[in-house]
Length: 350
Image (cartoon, rainbow, N blue to C red; front, side, top):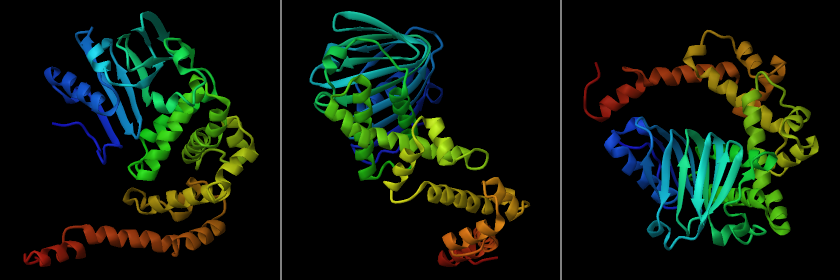
């Protein structure tokens, strides 16, 4: 029995944890070990007989992130755990509530609020049934970017506004990013998270300008791309509609894609073509006509679709569907691939 994970290097790790996967006597040690290695060291006292934890944990260079849903329990970070560490812990309450004892003070937050802690000092957190996001960032990284991060410690802050929405949506998209193990991507993602947390806590003017061209820009672009993916078939993915949903100008959206060496229309076309191609390979959709699949993906004209598909993939949609069918057949028992495997191992084919 194990935790699903993808450890690539000490600078990158991704794990999902659920108490449903572990016996009651074992889950606590497993979860504490995951948090210690990937985010920060802490212990737990269970305050309910029936406890549940579901968490997604991400480790990036200099950044640890945990997105967790739990029943009520107490989190303890002892003086021994705090010794020798020098991070900020940004704790955001998405649902429920939590009470913090830290630095000789007590403070409570509820859904829609956040608080900043210091890993160098012990703390106790009393959590009700809740959904929380917490992020650890070295003080050496966040300190120079924030106007006065130490002054913000143990001060509840409202999570209302675009900057908080950008942070939470960006983190969730990172949790789903399959290519994040690539070195350049994980370093960029870590910088973007640091930018966004600095802006939320209160960045200096210089750091705000840097974040606008780096972390905020990246978060907005990811959010807009996710919006496009969700609305390719049924929604309006034009620049004006996207601008309205994301509260930016249409010109700003066009410039975001230009900065990637493409255009909004080219990106949308590419994603629609990829969607059609994947559906043409889906055996469950073999009964559907190519035209119906193209219309479902948002194409309004079959002639334009056929031309774009052939130009993009170097074959017609019909040829793509046939190629996928041949490939599936070759993988079936007795198919060409299966026969080749049998011959290679010296087992005679039937």
